[in-house]
Amino acid sequence: MKIGTRQFFFGTRNGIFLSDTEEIKNPEKFFYCLLTKNKIGKIVNLIFQIRQLSSSIWNIG
Image 1: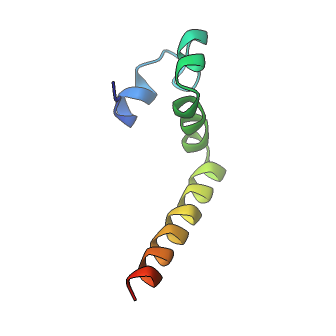
Image 2: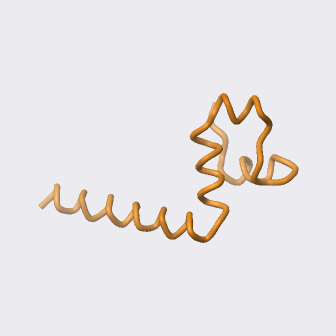
């Protein structure tokens, strides 16, 4: 089951921490939440997106 990012962030009471069972079941969603909640994570995410975009442009050319 896929959860939208908005529902994922605002569905919990504290917004950032999940229950223990949820953290064990979906560790990638937990870490994604932690990364996108702070500004450093947003910058890192942006860098990865730029790298992915530039590599796909080089693959096309």
